[in-house]
Amino acid sequence: MKLTRLSIPDVVIMVPKTFGDNRGFFMETFRDDFFRQEVADISFFQDNHSKSSRGILRGLHYQINQPQGKLVRVISGEVFDVAVDLCKSSPTFKKWIGVYLSDENKKILWVPPGFAHGFYVVSPEAEFVYKCTDYYAPEHERSIKWDDPVIDIQWPLIPGISPLLSEKDKKGISFKNAEVFE
Image (cartoon, rainbow, N blue to C red):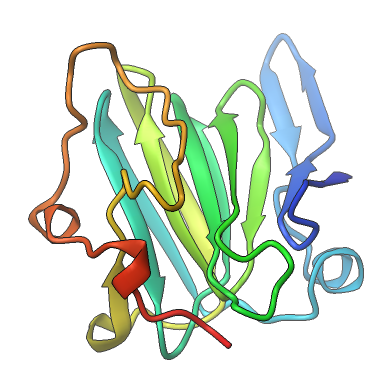
């Protein structure tokens, strides 16, 4: 597994070794001992899988209590995936990272606890799978507006078309009013 630490050092891209021939391919996408030693000494409690169409934007989500780290990858299609540092004590507070994840590039992104997360689907459809370091707790879930000017994420939107949002994400709050981590 090849690791790349990004401009926010706690956010890591992992690219698995892929073995393939005319029958298809094989790759190891997660190994607990490697992850604990090389990325973060943390346990995962829940796996999730979503399917979305082009132009759908999900996020920016986080849990203020029971914060979730997420190990995310795309198994079909392509998304622009974003992580935003919400830790006040961090030198990268309010900064964001955006990475294209696809079934072709096979990149896996580590989004640590204390970060907001979201993605935008750029292919006709995308299936997105991720491991979480804590259980989903709807009473602690928060959503920051995807287009908040303080964060100023440069989403690769389809020109002239607004992203499709859930009702929850339409009600996202501004960054300046968001609960963040110490």
